[in-house]
Length: 438
Image (tube, rainbow, N blue to C red; front, side):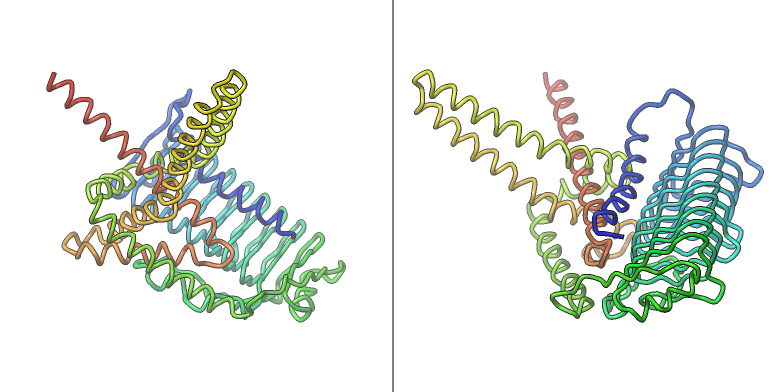
């Protein structure tokens, strides 16, 4: 599997999360159930004959959803049945029941329990993927992230790009697998600082092939050394296993690099938080409130701004230069030059502000919101404890090998969207005040 294909797979996972935001924001032509709260539960014996859109700390489906489940929550557990798709973002998605169509998720863990059944494809982007023995998917399985343990049955193809893979299951189709070197794994467990972290299996770095592992089609491997390729040959003795050595690292100690990146980012975020609290504490609290109450709209608006703002800057730059050329042709070159220089300076400042918001302010907003979510049951916890714990988790997610850039992108969009909603809220409040004063 080449690098370009890895990017396509990861982009598809991101699109699944963005689809949640878009579906939340755009009105639908059919009935839907919009549920929110600390805990959202579809009780055993209960049937919802619509799509379900849920935002909560915990989402539990013990009954039946006759449609899709779109969820943004810390933990999502499906013990019952969903007849449509599941699109979810959160800390953990656990399927012990049946999903009759596709599953798309981004988060720390996707787990298919021993009785978990998915009728079609599964795509997971995150830290861990755990497919227990007895679980089954009717379509393809794609995972991009840190570590995977696959013991179930896959009726389609398997695509994995991860640092660690323990495989002891069955794949009816083809297997396309890329694993990292055992020396390239992070020295720090990403879940170390996360309270109530999901229960992830421990996967030995690199590739581990069990005695029951079997692939019905072809096997393509991207591995760091021939020893792993020899072990991978046990997957299917009737086909050749292609071993493509991983690209050499400039610095062999990737774990140390990841740790140093985490420490550096955390310190930068902490300093940025000091200045933001000093200069814009009201904006920080408002944006954090919007992110906690409206995570999906925040993600949707953030994605739109992330795409539209650079396009707008490029368009305005071209328009200003064009106007300057026109003024020069009609003999107003000095005026045209002044307009172009002044406008380009303003646009450059706007671009710089946008970069600072994405790189720092959005991370502080997301980190504070995450810290408040973690300590919501302990409201007396010190502000800076809440802030620093949240920032540590954000910095750690961004420093993860393989998937850190994806977490960086999603976190930036969440923070950017929350800031935009806070700005719109302030404008609306000011307009109401002006009307009242008039």
